[in-house]
Length: 581
Image (cartoon, rainbow, N blue to C red; front, side, top):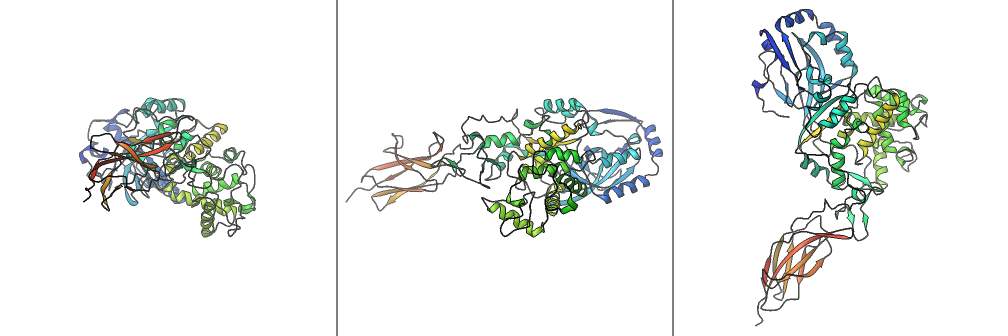
């Protein structure tokens, strides 16, 4: 979001109607010449907008319409619809906004919107051409009142192939163009995060933020000292019984959107709203092979309906994709559904269920207790209540707050609510891709892949020139995250006149430290001590002689499998031992 606005950059169409002809160019480079005489006839044709506006009011009274902004790097928001008004704000492509009202102004359709930035709510007016949504009701409303044929509209979703691809950075374009050519109705919106790639990677490497299972290749698992015990050669469990810290190389791979601009993986970027093309049969295909497939809720709640019927009913009620709900529960509970979180039999929490694993974090059984404590607090004492309550909680905490794709629920790079990075739904690094693939498979089996879908794809600043590679399965793990900085030798001083005491600054990535000593600053240094604990930050040299001067330097080390990596040498400090009297 950029609040430094160049007011001269944005000119409202109504302010230039007196021109004989007006040349408009949209975000994708498509131009159109409109004559003022045509604008006059259009104004006369849409003379009574009241019925259309009343019909729209009924739509949003039923449930909110959310849109994604697209069409420019800087999209102007106005405080009022007036030729004299300057923009009050600008938003970037990919921002989420709720459409609350519609206004016809001469030849242009305007939306009144509300939006949030850093948890603060704003409102204003925006040209409708900057908004796109998967909510079919908006297109049906426009069609019913024949608005598009009377307005200067450059529908961003209408751009094809290279035109859509050009809205993205060069490294994205081949992937976008290939998909757009294969599926002309698909719409691709760049989400300009404004975040630097290296900053995002650093944030995503926070402890326990991204986890993989111990069964994954070693290259996918971090071997930093805080994540891997070199002595026992075992990874430190971060969640549940087998979830460990992901390596930097695999985090980069899954974080990089370009790796997933394929037929199979693109749906992790689909907006998770309810749509009419979502059917019970499609939900059943997502549930195929699981404990929920063609099965009724075991306790008969919800009117003795099946899981698929429950997801459809809840999705329609909350206006959230039932495919998303089914895929999320499948991801969280697995195929067998044997988690204590949904057994209803866990000691102290009998009769409570948590299908969406809301607040279920911790190590070992702590996961179950925390999750079921949330279920009891929310009153999820039937299976249907747990499904609906978990879905509602997920929708209100994520989908309605800008994190409206699988990707954004895994990687919190939307700053409209709850800050950045920490507000993720899941720690499982692979979850967004897995869920997106489940949905794509269902769409394929339903034969609807050529329908219109909207994909919101994040873009970062200073990204690598090509997609980050998948680390080789047989490569060593953790090396890229174990680069050690030069340690700092803080102090070297006499201790009891016959010993020299050293102290240094801790390196959190190190397993330990090597201490070196020489008789002169540029002399030959010999390793005199190996410190095997990361937290040991002092050592006393007792093997010294009176009248001699000793020079010290250290370096840290980390063991990765059979290899040992060392840092550069620290600064040099020296101490002279006094002569005996």
